[in-house]
Length: 65
Image 1 (spheres, rainbow, N blue to C red):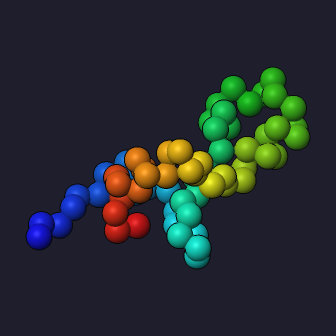
Image 2 (tube, rainbow, N blue to C red):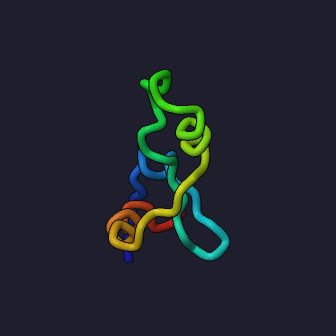
Image 3 (cartoon, one colour):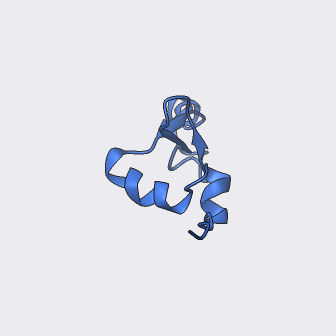
């Protein structure tokens, strides 16, 4: 049985939780932050859990994460 290659870009952007879920960075928090409210900017610092509908597709990219 051959080994799978993990997607290098996905590896760097995700982290596995203790329960097996995947954490990702919050969207819309990369740039153009000056016109957004302080509350929005604070909330973008936190990680979010990958949604269930995307989980199967993304988990296939990083089988050993």
